[in-house]
Image 1 (cartoon, one colour):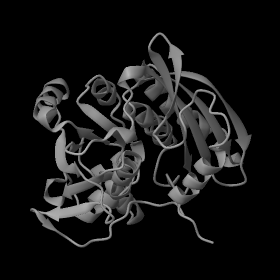
Image 2: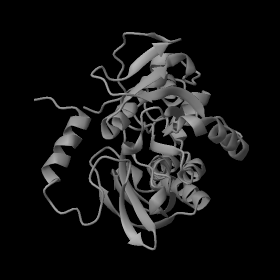
Image 3: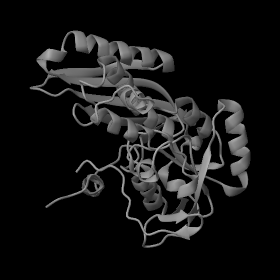
Length: 314
């Protein structure tokens, strides 16, 4: 019987719910957290990149894959409002990638680790028959009171995103069409993460729920809705993008931040954010009472009937 990626994850969460949690959060957020005392918590996440799914060796340099492997994992830490402190890295490499390719990969991974001050705390290596697989565990640290969870959205909150959407999906499309030189293609190959922005937003109490956009807001917004027990109305004319609206809301791997913000504090937050980062926080909608219809898509106030979904692995 076919099962979606998120259905599979939900089934695992239900199966393991009866086991002791050991002080860790249950499955369902960008990271799990554990209180380490003194008002602080560690946040931890893991993610894989698989050749042929997340990158193409003929289109991306090993250096770019190394950078991307780190960044997309640090993005999960940033999405909780934390600063990254360390990672663990595991590699499964075929024989044609154990020398020059692996060296260039590690150079990219090291350069981004140095840029963000993250230690490499361990990992593993093993052989592969053909495809490269990269697995990273990302670890962050933050004040427990400041953790941003998907379950904290409130009816009346404004929905904001930290940058233009659909660019990575447009870049993948360019690559598959034979052009790896476009701006979008370069972004897709190298990856993105709002690390400084996430840590700054973590200190702002008017930011309620937050996550990063890995599968497109058509899917990722639903995670906040389900965890918080709310609905969402999104104005498509307000979604920032350099591509078409369907790609913008369904395309994966943008790694921008998606957040809900107290309505009466939203404009002040946007001004402060622009002063700090010289970049916009874009308001794209509002959290509403839950309905049975999923996301309410609006075009200049008029509801439109579309069935948009983000990237799904299965």
